[in-house]
Amino acid sequence: MPELENCKGCGKLFVRVSSPYCRDCLNEQEKQFDTVYSYIRKQENRMSTVTQVHEATDVDLDWIYQWIREGRLKTAVFPNLGYPCRSCGRTIQNGTLCEHCRKKLERDMQQEHIDDSQTNFKGKTYHT
Image (cartoon, rainbow, N blue to C red; front, side, top):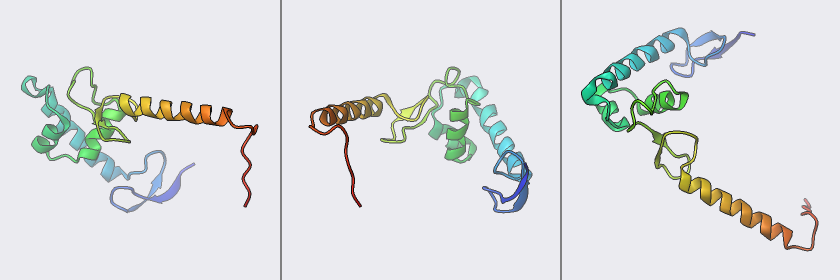
């Protein structure tokens, strides 16, 4: 059901149907996407990194990262594009964590499970 909301981009009040952005901001984002896509589609720019694309097109880095996450910019076609890992900031092309951070998280979870199983208690009790 549509509801009134402030646009996430410009703050203007609008009737939200699906996107958190008003029609004007969505149109502007599409123009920026077209600028980026036109730039990287050229043969000499296909190997550009996100930073190089940003510098050449003056499009916000966050938008470029978002389009890569959404799959609008395909990393199979543009292999040097990626976005930062949510933990350490390394460039990745899918998911939210890089391989290193994912493995570290798995090790930490396994260690916690081992620590829990070695206690004499069947579960932890917390008192307030």
